[in-house]
Length: 212
Image (cartoon, rainbow, N blue to C red; front, side):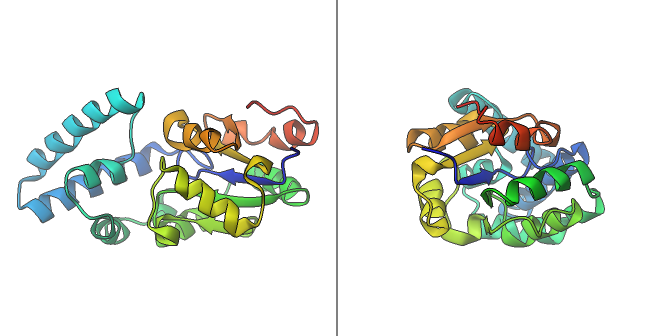
């Protein structure tokens, strides 16, 4: 079926930032330390050891949200901490080439964001990179209290977009987290390494040259 909707992962896909990766890590260590009443160093060691073991299962690094959840930290608690800990907008700037690409795509497709991040951090990020006005819908953890790689997240998003699952294409930078579950339910998928790969998407989609 012809693509009607494109669902973009956000972190690592619409932007890349080592500074933000560092802040997310720091916020995760801080959260575990506070909630478990342990030192920051102990929290760091626990989180990174857990991430290493989870990487074996998923085949790539997993988000801190999944890591903290596996260590017994409720997702809502983690989001409260990271919202207070830092604002992504302080580390990002607008991306004119990304804006241009999304503007072209928006004229032909329904566009959405699907992210494990929370609504506040997601809106801060999209505003900072200058693309918050290009998406018809933004699906965050707050939307359904579901996390990728749960296929239900993708199914619910397609239902709310009112687009058939096989008419959706999911774009992301992590195959096992962003793309494998989407592909499993019948979406087409496109793996990217960051925003630079999105600059050429209008040509690829409008010419029908999509990697599935």
